[in-house]
Image 1 (cartoon, rainbow, N blue to C red):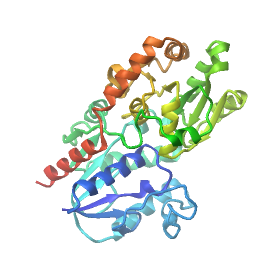
Image 2 (tube, rainbow, N blue to C red):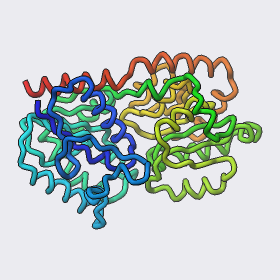
Image 3 (cartoon, rainbow, N blue to C red):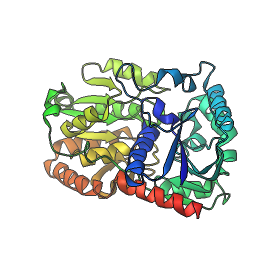
Image 4 (tube, one colour):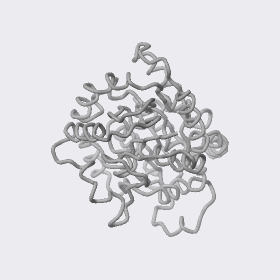
Length: 372
């Protein structure tokens, strides 16, 4: 099999799509080394390259213009499509992990659609992104021979929104790395300077993640709880977050924004957290709750979209549109010992149902079936 994969999402700090792609590629190469892999970074290459925070590596500076064209989002996206068209090699299968297939020549196309927030909730995204998706997504996704979604919830949305234009839609759950995300305390955990007791939030600082609702819920907690439990915020600095940033400034001393962290640091934070709060309005899967459960961290999570599908009975569910509901969930998980222990145990059990190896095997099987 000659397999080409769009790996441009790996050229910048890894968020949801980047983590999904990186973990799958590691497993693909381990499980099926005989496949001829080609990676598309705006050019075709045989070596897997991944962004890292270490100085002098990661972006592979000679090529970073592909990701950081100064003429704006839409122009940059057009250039990526033009560059893809220039590469005349024809592949057996092209895997697009990031919504919109590029003009890469292949016999078959498989694309992953992680969610439909760009269409259903455009107010949660920058205008230039919505403009680009509006012009390109529905037109280009029709070229896919198979669409992969990360949850049944998104599969149902795909079925409804695509109006039967592409009947081949398959749910394959995402996974987590058990080598990194586990409940056993490590020596490295002790070296990190974190508060003794803290509530954790993991996600980009953007409207969809509902950080504003969490900050307002934190304000509603009793004073003695806020005094004992600080709030740590982890994630890539996003957009549409001015009101959140202003409230974070007001709460400085109790609320700490640590920015983007690597997986080792993130896993240590999960293990030490009193709970993870994930009050997102909408998710196609939801990696942070899964990773937290694997680390023995109880999760307070929204009762919407794919999140109940991922967390099962292991999450304490709240209404993301009700600040009081979020505050009550946090308070109960922090103060009710029996509830907390039950959530931890159920979370550890729930996490065992997911793995990147299992996800990768199902992806590879789907690729072979599409080619047949």
